[in-house]
Length: 339
DNA sequence: CAGCAGGGGGCGC
DNA sequence: CGCCCCCTGCTGT
Image 1 (spheres, rainbow, N blue to C red):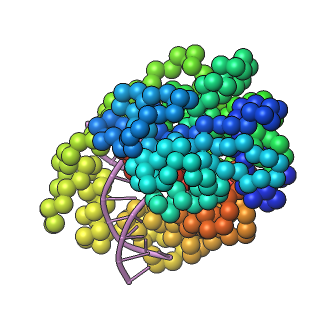
Image 2: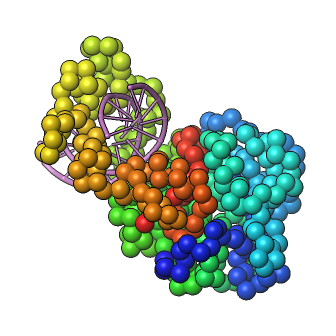
Image 3: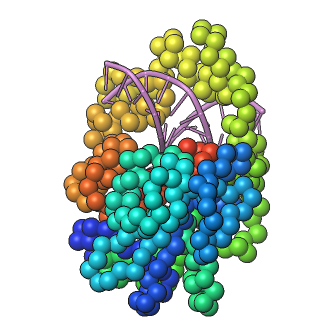
């Protein structure tokens, strides 16, 4: 990402795949569950009505929550998203209502669309037309201020994470990169992007049957599966509260007893968990504020505050991290800077 | 700014 | 399998 992509453009436009095809600048954006979703066992929220002809019928277990369609844009127009179908929390939105993309995102946030799932684009028609092997499937193409096209979509690669890894591709550079949000949260650098794992990748991936979790380790999957059960074998002898893991219980008991193993080397504070200590040190000693707003000079120790600041203004697509909502995981749709 | 619960990666046994 | 470490999200002051 270059500096030219920075503060000038308040937001981006959503386009179809044909960046040179101005007559066909319609993209279909749909929120839905998918093969990488947590839809299993969740009550459908279908708002009823026949799907538009361009919309494929949901597959079994797939929950189509909201269908959005961008409309043709003239030069200089604000990008629009047209609600084709509203479902769930958004089912009261009349079909055909147009929101700017920016407003749309704010609406998502204000409504706390905890039931929204994956923002995904139906590009099947255009992909059929386009024979380019680089045309991403199920991508939302986002045009930047320098006519760059970035596509953001659900990672369909084999190691898609439950928290919502996304693919980011920059057509200008004709490459596709794989975004791992957890990595970026640490590195804060797009250099951490690693190549998308192709479908020809032979690595064995273990998938959770109950949600979108995948792991390259069977042990991680076995441990993960336990979160879907109510079994909590570790019980606090002081308050009888139960926990899934011994670590959680230990931390809990330490909170009871006042045992704080993690002591700050620069003051007298001590904490139950290392994470608390690390955060304390950022607040009081290192003054590090890793989460920076890409629009203003605001920065924050904690990501949630930075996110609120970012959403309070407009949203810059220079570098974004998407964390989408899944029905099961009950996550909000987040867009925030991670540089 | 801190407390606390939850979850995943990595690693040793 | 258990544990450590780290990160995340929510909440209270």
